[in-house]
Length: 136
Image (spheres, rainbow, N blue to C red):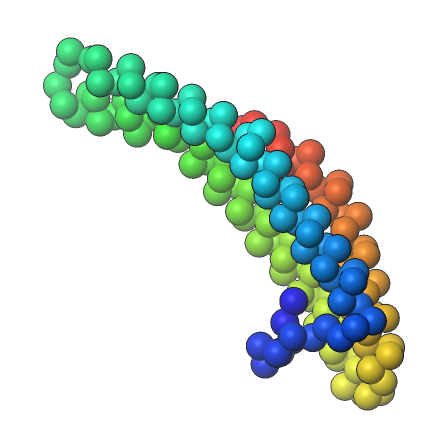
């Protein structure tokens, strides 16, 4: 997580909470890849193989191939959109911490605030995960 000018906003106090959030996000992404996206990709490849057996014009085969890839493209786009929104919410929380710190110049309060953001969004990610894992 970076601050306004691209500099890391974390110090030792909140680093653990931020690292935990990042690790949880990485774990969710790996689980999505293995349990959802790879099976969808496999199904798209199997579908594509069937398209090559079509006896019609080339346009028919191309339309078939495009249709095979639609489900995974839709799901990946939806997941990426939700994850971007999640990231924006985390950034807004950290921005509020920066705004508070600008008036107090208290690094300890800033660290605590950012840690609280990270802990809160760990819980949010846990509740968002089932929605991300749904096959669409």
